[in-house]
Length: 584
Image 1 (cartoon, rainbow, N blue to C red):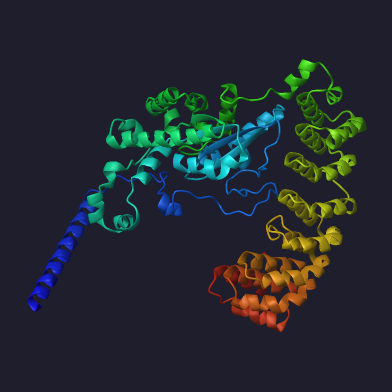
Image 2 (cartoon, one colour; image 1 turned 90 degrees about the vertical axis):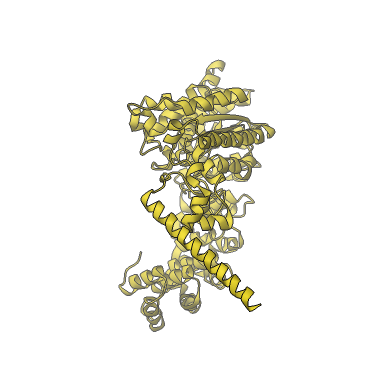
């Protein structure tokens, strides 16, 4: 028995020594013959987001309207789930090129397209469903998890050429324990032979077109497209594809567009609407890009122009064409029997400053009484564009409209009007009780912007602290903090939130109490405790709050001195600012 054990140990030691020698040899080989590096723009999904899909966490409600990421976790404005009557919905599924990386959100081509269609009076709603690093796999998942519930009429798959190698590299990558070993062991890397299956750059798609890994990559890409196409068509929507070039494709000496040609051939064989955007983008040359593949503002505008010009989308006619066919003035057309004509008339009236009170009265009447949802929505928008303060009662009434499109347009119109605070507060208080979270967000955000003048709304805002969105950027807590000392009555409710189990509410409650200032002195015991014992987010905001409320109190000073040695850098920063008598 002892001899057998010795033999086993000897065999184990010999095997381990062999593996160590092989590992060392493989590491030496890698040093002398480094493998081809995979381009930084080809993401490892597991490394980047621990799976096949991700979105950004966001508590956005649509207010403030300039939030970078909406509640779906993508870089787009907030859209109502309820589909408006008479509106064509177009969804673009893409990656950072569609998102608009390197440019402002409003400069991304989907937003440019929507602005152009809106300027023409076409009732079209454009969705930008895209994120950094998404490939065709993520875009297919995003359709099912995000876009489908909005019931789009057309779904456009926006393809960047790096999508193809990303699919290949990620879908052929070893999983689980083997993947972990692959990252750590040169011997495992030699056995797995990643370079034989991974594509290192987009250029390889052109240079090694007939290699097995490129052929496999194209096949995987086409399978993902078919899966997305089938899901979109099953929902009754139309499906289309656009393909962007890489920057090197518009430079002198560029290779023939063989990859685009292959995708085109695939689309034709599958009966898919398809546009290769390379010729249009090439008209601008390299100034169409901000880097290797992301579009510049000029490039994005050119793409939006091409999408309209080529007829890829089935779009409703411009408003002026609708009106010209009737031969009526917009004011007269507002009484036409055809709802499409009345909607076009409201759009036109919103873009013409003339007409005065008569036009404002007619639009307000349409907002209150027209049976058509699109007409009421267009009338609300027109009143906002005209700055018609006299229409505020009609717009406030429309916040309770049965259709989301009308309610949302009325909210946006009211936000554009310069209303007297005393006159605005009662309507906003009523809107805080809306069943529509977007309208509640509008009301809370608007009340917060009135600051101290919104003090009469404090009881309603305290009641709204029970809402699910109460501590979001457009929630009641932030509105109370902006009101400041006039929100003293909210201190007990905010303390209750500070002492509750939800970390997100805890730190936001601490922030609100700090912004209320010395009037929140009753909250100091809870804030001092939170500054010593709580989650780092809460500690940082509690430190900031106590310094705002009572910076000279001995217990506050002691807490700040202790916080200056906190293990968390943000807590230390807030304590340091407070000790030096500064605020950030």
